[in-house]
Image 1 (cartoon, rainbow, N blue to C red):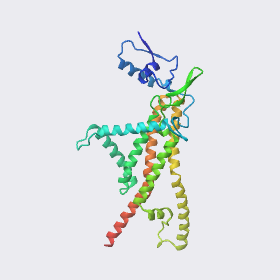
Image 2: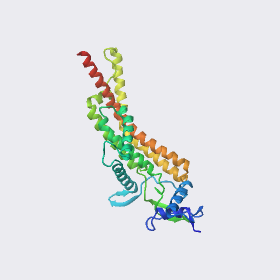
Image 3: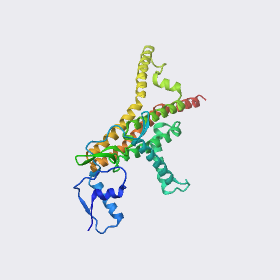
Image 4: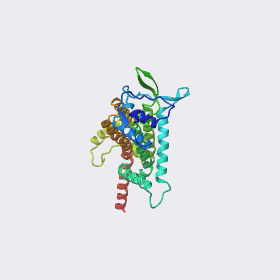
Length: 328
């Protein structure tokens, strides 16, 4: 009868003999695999590894706040583990979509039907928020944000992410000092980049579909009806709306910071929670939900920022059209 250590069986399947070092804690439960095929042995080892709370991947030190530089380019520039993870996952997303859709046809395949169902669901969610005028320009951005952030958030839930890499032995335990893989959204630089893209896209879309004049009036203009408002009250309201506009400009200016901190804090905190609890299954499934919610929150806030200007402009355009029809 051949006896396999649980973590040893998994690592023999998941990893090559050469490459980064891995720590296999001693004195773990063993799995007897006398008459199982190779595929069944690997499947059983992987299932039991997940079911045992992933003790081989646990870390008491948590996840470092800074990404690890893997390739030094000189002059302060480096390619980090989070950058490589972002590139690889992005390529996999593109390949997955192309594989699912294939050659688009009127009678969709199963993969095309899955992608179309996702797009239709997101369209029904975002179109009422953004408005019909700005929707064609903003929808590709919003879909890309949602899918990209969601899959990167869930990257941290895969075994070995953040805990496989190079390190050294300390008191009989292996400590990873340079992780090979790090979730893209657990790096503050990455979330800042996503937030700046969101802010830049917002500025381009609202300037194109609302215009500078409408934006200035929306921020600083007096919204009261001058004919129905007494002059002293109208002047006081103008001062109030001006001050409110200054506050609104400040809130717009800090949007990239709030978007990036919210996403980074939740994902980075979840990573540390999982490593500190040795991937306890309750927190594992909780982080699945957190990853989905944070992707949805980031995308919804981007759509709301666009809709606050552009969707309101649609209402004004509709009112203007109605008034012109009534005059005729």
